[in-house]
Structures are given as structure tokens and as C-alpha cells.
Length: 455
Ligand SMILES: Cc1cc2nc3c(=O)[nH]c(=O)nc-3n(C[C@H](O)[C@H](O)[C@H](O)COP(=O)(O)OP(=O)(O)OC[C@H]3O[C@@H](n4cnc5c(N)ncnc54)[C@H](O)[C@@H]3O)c2cc1C
Image (tube, rainbow, N blue to C red; front, top):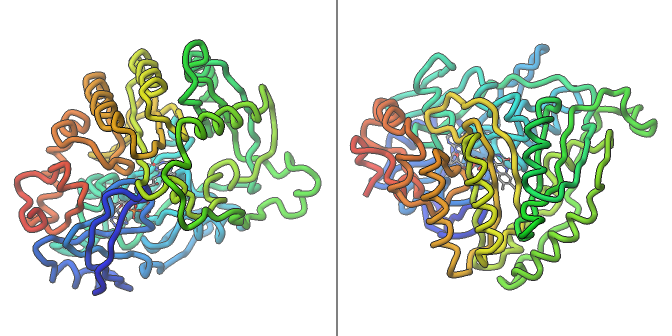
């Protein structure tokens, strides 16, 4: 097995692992059966930002060979190999009138990686995270191969379990029917955070999808000014004449490629401020019923390949938190401290989560979720985020493990109160602690029962 240096999408904290590329569930089972002391972990397309898909000194299972089957029945039930990307699923089935029930902000994730992180999209307030739409998974654990359904504990330990219960090799997912590959979008440019939150609270439930882009550098009276976009799948009849002939056409292209190398100084407070200003100004103040393509609405960053390289050699991190409803003051204070903390954020996104999801370690809980991309570098960054974590935990919030690269282990228990329950279910599937990751070692959250993978 070749050894490779791996990082997450943020390109920080590289570690080396032996990378295996099995082509079937049987080969995955062999790998788990012959694991060394540092254990095994699945990796999809490496779109988690931090160290969730790394396993220093151990084995990493590259799932790109697990692409069979890829089938859809007449009722929209998809069966996919865990290594199939959402990009492939959409390119194959949107033209036939079926869309994924939940999509993150990039199509470049695998079905297995999406389930392992229990990803959410812009429709969480109505549809929950992806686990709610999964009807079966095949999971290979160190103790055997399991066909799991929502009535099984191990199913919910795996959905959101960040690869630590075993390797998912197949997923069944309920797709949704669409008449077109377009979204009808309403846009509002807001002057501040309070207006943004008020609009979302009052009107989100009228839209399937909702997201606010926040200018995280504006302060004072314009603190948290935003561009709020909300939309629904467009009926074929709503399309402009030019698109009516082929309403389900879906063939998104990459329009730009980031250079292979960029100086760390490229994204600094000044350039980020200029970008945010331009982005805010270019959005319509108020627009109703604009027709956008699926790719532009859901995955604008996929149009620029390798955009993570723009952050330079030091890389970047994403800080994504959720705060329960009723803790809006803490959210306001968080945005205030980030705007004034000398740690510029290129990208800030605010969404409203609906009901909690059933995964033991699923991230979404009812409340506000804020996600920020920040270049690594400013010395104030670590202390600022540590201090925000403390406020967050006290307010009943949490950070998203699929984005995390820096949370301290003592916080994880407070943020994820079902951790012990998860450890107990995981311990039955993997009593010797074969499944392990850098994230799990850093957070120490595998519990006392795990030994083999934890060195
Ligand atoms: C631009 C961008 C936008 C994003 N937007 C969102 C968003 O809106 N909502 C959201 O929820 N997330 C979002 N994400 C995060 C992303 O959806 C998750 O990190 C997802 O898990 C990445 O999938 P992957 O296939 O790349 O998995 P990887 O990053 O390779 O792995 C992620 C985790 O899944 C595990 N895993 C992967 N495959 C398997 C498998 N077959 N069996 C068991 N475990 C497995 C890994 O061990 C690891 O713990 C975004 C990421 C990017 C880069």
C-alpha cells in the first residue's frame, strides 16, 4: 500500500497514512481484518475541512473504487456505492427528473462521506439532514458486515459518526422529484444581522431553501449585513422560453481553476474586505422570482476548481457552529467579536436549522448555524476561537465535526451530550477500536473501550 500525506480541504495538519483502494465490500472486510495498531478509516473526496478523514500512521481506505451499484427505481429510491459522488448522482439523475433530498455546498462529496457526516443543506429547516432520507446502509465493521436500517442503533451511530463505526459501502436514499434543473429565487439585501434574522424567522418556512451570506467584516450599525437568498425548485412552466425545450438539462462546468500556488498574503483583511463589499453591493436589493440554475444556487464554489489553494501554504479553517433559538444575543456577540477580532473571514453563511436529527453525533439541532472560512495565520485566531467555543458550549451550542480542525477535547462532551450512548453502540461494533482517525485521537472521543486504534 502506498503511503500518502493527507490533509482535509483546509490543507492544515498533514499526516501520513497507508492508502488502500478496495473495489468491493469483501476487500474492505479483509483490510479491517488485517489492520495494524493505528487502525483504519474510510476517506471519500476529502471535503471535510480538518482531520476527520486522516489516520496518521494507520490505514486509510480510499472509497473511490466503491462506485457500484448506481441504480434508481421508478419511485425515486437510489441505491449507490458509497464512493459515488453527489456530482455523479446529480449528473445522472437530474436529467431524469430526480434530485438529491439534501446537498451540502459542494457536489464533490461521496455518498458515504455525506452520510458519515450526516450533512445538511439549505433545506434543513424543512427536510432535516441527509440521514432522514436514508433507508438502508451496508456497513463493514471489524466484527462483520451489516445491513442497517433506521430502526437499528448502529445505523444512527454511523449517520454522523464520522467513519468511526466502520466503512459504509452502499447507501439507499430517497430522492425527490423535480420538473426542472432550476430554482426560483427571491433575494433580499439586509442592512444588519437583526433584520436578516427577523426575515428568516418570519419567512423561511415559505421556502424549501434558505441561506444568508453574511459580511463578517462589517461592524457598528451594519454588523452582520447580509444577502439572503431563498428559493424552490422551479416548475417547468416557470422557465424562460429558451430553457423550456430541455427543462432538466444539467451539465455544470468548472469555469476557473485556482493557480497551483498562491501566497498566504493573498487573502488578508484588506482583500477580504474588498471582496465582501463588492459581493454585497452586486446583489440586488430586493428581487423576486429570478430563475437560477441548480449548480449556481447550491454549489457556486464548484465552478472554481482547487479554490482552497487560494489560502496559500498555511491553509484555512472553517468554524461552523449552531446556537439554539433563544441565544440570538450570543450569536450577535459572536459575529461582533469575529468582526473586531483581527481574524478576517472570507465567507460567512447563516442558516436556520429545523428539528434535531436522530444520529447520536449529528450536528444539526434547532437553532442558528453560522459557518465562516478563515485563513490560518493571525496569532489571535486560536485564542479567539477557543473563547468563542467556551461561550458556545455554555449557551448549549456546538461546532460541526466535519469542519473542525482545532476543538479542544474537553469541550466535545458538553457539545455532544449523546457521546456516551454513541461510544456504547460503537464499542459493540468495534470492540478492539480498529476504526480511528486523527480527529478521534485529538478529541479523545472514542472512549475507554477503544484500544487498537488509539496509540
Ligand atoms: C465547499 C464546501 C461546502 C460544504 N458545505 C457543506 C454544507 O453545506 N453542509 C454540510 O453538512 N457539509 C458541508 N461541507 C462538508 C462536507 O459535506 C462533508 O465534510 C462531507 O463529509 C465530505 O464528504 P467526503 O466524501 O469528501 O468525505 P471525507 O471528507 O473524505 O470524509 C469525511 C468523514 O466521512 C468519513 N467517511 C467518508 N467516506 C466514508 C465511508 N464510505 N464510510 C464511512 N465513513 C466515511 C470519513 O472517515 C470522515 O470522517 C462542505 C464542504 C466543502 C468543501
